Image 1 (tube, helix red, strand yellow):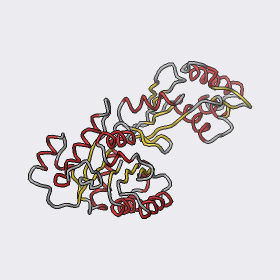
Image 2: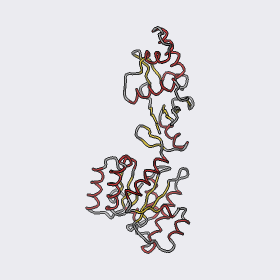
Image 3: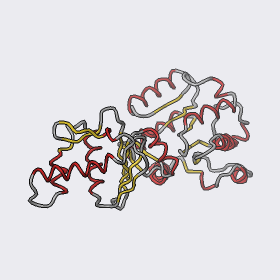
Image 4: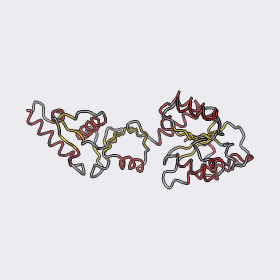
Length: 306
């Protein structure tokens, strides 16, 4: 979540992200606090055209009280942040009329308020600025608000400092990739995904596989090289790619002794699928049709890798 009051600085940041870390744009929200007007409208529309996955809130779509009330500003900002996310805020937000002009750095207390609005998984906060001097009390104010003075990033160092800092944080905090969606590293993040999907497979760095989701009777942990894990991944791959199922013969030949007759191959496959079905609240969630196994229509599935 990026909060900035100047169109130019947002434009430069988006250009740097587009060139150095384009995948981050789909994970980025921008709260643009530039004053309303034709230039603001035209620039915001250009951002949206150039970066279709970017989410932008700006004057014209914002409640006017965002600029005049600290309470309205903090509520709006918190509503655009996901738990455990990252807030990157300019130190001086000159368009917020409730901030004293001679103590512009007090915007740090707004970030502290927003962070406190999350009962669990509060967002991390970083600040950027191109100012060289902050006033005698700025460092102390940062510490009192619960921030490290090193959290202030030099705004002009976009390619060398700002973009690498954003990418590094998100790589550490959201290490899983769920079919294109970043997922956090905590148990709460994982439970959030498993509460939303019927079956989700998590592929660990060591090759192990764990399964969760609403369709399973309990979470399952499978060792690296597990044949059951291979079959689950084939079933999920088939669903994600809208395939025609995993052929019974393919499963059986992978498990049966070399040279086994067709009848033995199909029997081995059936016994194997009996184990998989036993993991499910409803064994009928895996169906057999046209000599192939497939997940029942309507199941929501996912696959996450580090």
